[in-house]
Image (cartoon, rainbow, N blue to C red; front, side, top):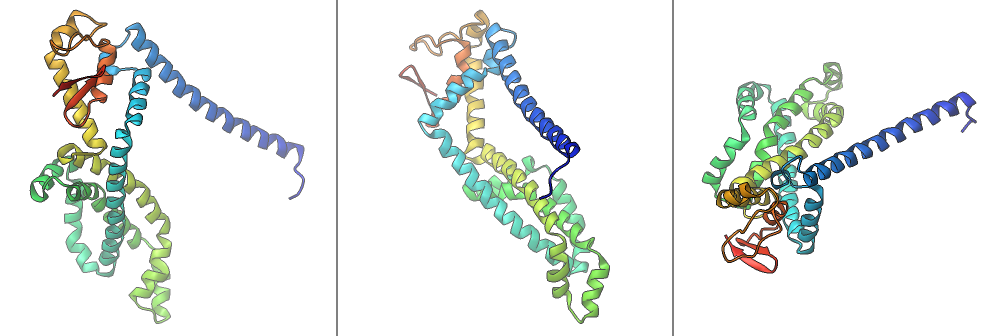
Length: 287
């Protein structure tokens, strides 16, 4: 490698300094947000019962790590997401190839694919639960339904926009449509396929979470919806206690000791066991 001139070294130093400043700024922005959130909760600028605080979230996270409930539900959601992602990739590429090989079929199916892609998937999930039952297969299909139709349309559009001169060259050399597909279309669309896969992994996760909202008994979606339901029950049952004091939640039931107040409410909700019981200071409160 040739020696760099002073001007080149100065330029490279400026580039490295700029990257360093960007990374440091991102970190400080994130830490500043957490600090502002914590101070606001402690000073009463925001309602810590509703917004919680970083310290409470961290303590709750640590307790869920200790009892391993968090990792169990994360693993289940990741498994369902990966399975739906794999099926989406293979079905998306396979269907797009089929549509490219059969132009007449693509003209017939394209409006239906557009309509299916535009459907609100959160409205489709309850129908899947009714049709297929509340099981893991339904959740995987819900994850696929969010990504599959858009994936087919995007890949088919990319296949159709491949340089026609290259395809004509294959035919000139006595190749057939399969040769054009394997030698020109697929290699030309590798970047588009990878880009579509990047989008699909996120969409599959969204679909799996929606499925767990509706019919899951485990997973992150189930944790979210369960925590929300418990939170609402506590608010409805103890609204007078919450109104009487901004510092204390009051008693959750007549036979329970005082909790540590409204600042612990979010933690109690998130620590709710998924067997329908809350563990508070060594005691239990049945839901």
